[in-house]
Each structure stands twice: as structure tokens, then as C-alpha cells.
Length: 608
Image (cartoon, rainbow, N blue to C red; front, side, top):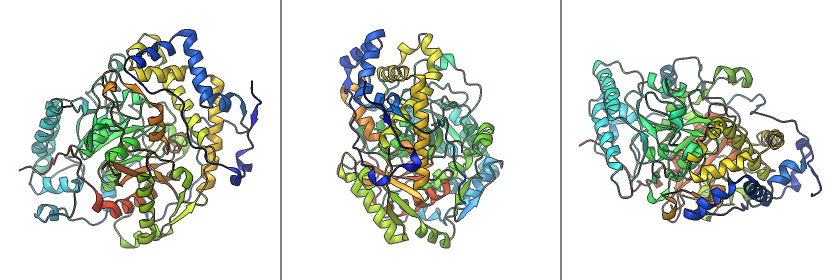
């Protein structure tokens, strides 16, 4: 037994003594027969606990959770100190109807003339159709929602015949889509559309309820033990705005993976390179948006699951502050790290969808006391000047700890552009205890997952899970009650460190992921894989958003030498969505000319 380590109180930590530790994950990469054999070993009563104990020791988890004295009291869910008001924003009442909030968000967007895109003027580079383009096309009778629906249905039906297959949706009903589109078409004919989102096609991740579809969480059995009687709260808010819901998007089983690999329903392919992963766990939603098939999608983010696939697929993904949107009606509605967030091809479309779905649950309103939500006012030029006062925090050693310097170089160039174009100042910061943060996160999300799945696993459903999920579950089962409490003490420490950083800077900037889209090993398609090194690279920068509940957004900023998308992540103060959306919009504008058309792209609105 080693000597007990005693941590100094977080408030007394001398930052000059903090040394950056490169993350080294010690775990085997397994596919095929070796993967199956390893699962049998970790599920064996005595051998399994010995293996898990060894792996946890190798990765310094035992030392941190059991042999360390942590002076802070536990924090079982994010607790935020009061925050200053954000500059240049429009405040919205979250009690207002979703369609009214969307209307207000629309007024905050910069001037844009969709007609110019239809006049035959060729644009300088590739661009995605925006929600405002669809609304203009419908109002001008260039197309109808029903015409667009037919094109989307034919693409989805064709996807299963692709070589390799590209399964985007797990549940899909062509007649239901036609019915929704016909109702929207009628509203446009009668001139009484519900909002700018009327007739906009969106996909919903398979762990969020969207009636009448089952919510399987990409398992083979979840729908047998959990029925769907109605829409999740956020889905019903979209429906009231006239959104057409195309079905349930593919995902990594139960959200427990970062690649999107899924032998149950097939693995979604990256639209930029079909031999590569989309990232996970919101693999289907990100691929559907990146391929141009839908304007937006809803994902969930408990460990980067919106931001990782958005970054790898070259689109925008927003993780809101914990508690800003209601989780009611999702498989992860009882957790303390997850949120439901929008994925879209542009920042402005993310803002419009965010406007529709926001609104805290009654419980979170009491416990978190969220301030009123705000939108960035992008409509006036004066407000662009407020960007100049933003201080961006960069922890250089962490920022550069990536698989390929292409990532850090591209992200660094964007920071220089922000400084040159808007006067944003980049300030060097130190974020202590990153290893502790990762450990606290895996214990938190793991214990909460284990708690919610325990009855089903006890009932014999555990053996029907994918092999990599079963390895994760074996790890989660090995956590003790004292591990969980220690992780929550670490959570309070790490929250203190971040709140101190936010006294000096407004936004923390990092690459979104430490690597671009990884290749799909052919041996991983049938039975899945476990590769913790890849997971560590993909999750390197995203944990603070989940463990601490901070808002974060990923924006596409360029490509590596192989042409794979790179994302920049902006992490904001608690409730600081408007600030990161404003900055994201500026980043998007600076990088717009470099955007490339994905190899698999469907020009859905251009109906000839």
C-alpha cells in the first residue's frame, strides 16, 4: 500500500508548480476474437475484478480515488456562482412559446438575402443551405416541403444499398414524413406557417423520445423495456415550430463510445471519407447534417457526444450549460453530465434550433437558478465591436497535445485571425488537475449509467449489449461508493479552478478533438472494438463541458493534410451561451472560404 497523497485545498494551489502531464492511457486495442475473449475474462467473477483492478492501477485511478485525501466537500451536480450579464445580447423569457423565442432569435441574426443564392450567381466556395434558404424557397413557391420530403426519403432508402452501407437512421417511417410534410405544405399555401422552422427537416438521436418511434438507444432491446408514449420535451418544442422529424438517428450504443461504431444497426460513415468514423456517440445526427440531408439534428452530450462527431464531420455542435434545456423524455434524463444539444451546418441554424428547445426543467430551475437565456445580437454592426473586448484563454501545452500538428496549427491560425480581425486577446492560462478531471468524469458518468441500467442488466439484458459496451459496464461496476464520493470532491476542486480562470478570461479555446476522424478497422464492423487510445484523443478537450456543466461549441475551421475536418472548441462561463455563439459566428465567417463539400453530399434543396 502506497503512502496516502494529500492534496492542498484548491484555493491554495500554487499554479506555478503545475506541470502539464501528457495523457497516457494503458489499455489494449481489441477487435474480433480477442475482443470477445477479453469480454469473457472481464465478466468472469474473480478474474474480471483482478483485470479491472490492474487496469485502474495502471491508469492511476486507484491512487487518485482511494489513496488521496481530497479536502473539498463533494459536489454531486454542477453548482455555479452568480455570473455577470453578457454584453450585446437579447434576453428571452424561457416561458414564452418556442415559436416566439425562435422569432426573437431570427431578429438577432445578421442581414441575409436568400434570393441571391437562387439568382444563379455562383458563390465563391461550397456552402450549406441554411434554414433561411429553405424558408425563402417555400415562401417563394420554388419548392414545397412535400417535394423536399420525397428527395430525402429516396436518399434514406438508397443509403442501405450503398457499398459500404451508410445507415443514418435506426427508425424511419416514410409515410409519417410525408404526412408531416403535407401539413407543412398546406400551411405555406394558406400563408400561416408556424415559424421559420416550419418545413425544416431534422433527425433526432435514438436516445431522445420522438413519438411514435421507439427509443432503442441503438441497442437491440431497450424498446422492449421502455415504451415511448409521447415526445421528449425538446422534441415537442420543435414540433410546435413546424419542424418535420425524419426519424431516429443512429448512434454508438447507449452513447457509450466516441467513434460511432455500431454492429447492431451498422456503423455510420463519415461524409468526408466513408472509410472513417463519424465520431460518437451522436454519429447519425452529425453525418445527416454534414451530408446535407437535414438542416439540423438533436444529439446528446455526456462526454463530448455532440461536439466530437460535429468536429469530425465538419459541422457545428452546441453543448449548452447543464440544465439550460430539459432532458425529460431522454434515456439519460437522470444524469448530472448530459445535455440535449443541436447540431447544424451553420452557427445561425444552431441558434434557431437552440431558441426552440431551450427551457430548464422545473427541478433545475429551483436548484440551479438559471438566469434568463440570451441570444447574441448579430444584427447590428456596433455589436461586432464587443468581440474585441473578449479575452480568450489558451493552455498552450494542452492545446498542442494532439495526434497531428495539423490540428493545433489550424486552430492557432484562427486565434491569430480573431486577433487581427476583431482584436480578441489570447491569454496564456494553466488548467490544473486535468487527469483528475478525466477520472472524476468517467466515475460520474459511469456510476450514473450503471445505476440506470442495473435493473435491465440484472434481468439478463446485459449480455445483449455490444462487446465494447460490456467492457465499459464491467469498469463501471468496479467503482465503489467511496470512488463516487471522491470523484465528486474532485468535481468541486475542478470547478473552483475553472471559475478562477474565468475571472481572467471570457472563453477557453482548444481544438475540439485531439485527432481527426480515425479509420474504421475492417475487423471492427462485425463485433465492434475497444481502443482507449483513440477515445483519449477524441475526448482530450471536452470533459470540462460535461463534468462542470459548462457551455461549449465546436466550429469547423479547416482540414488536415488528408482533407479531414478540424474543429475549434469554445468553452464559456456558466450560462454563457450567447458569448460563445457570438464568437463562433465570427470564427465561422473567418473560415467560410475554406469550407469543402463532403464526398457524400446531397443537394436536397436544389430540386431540378
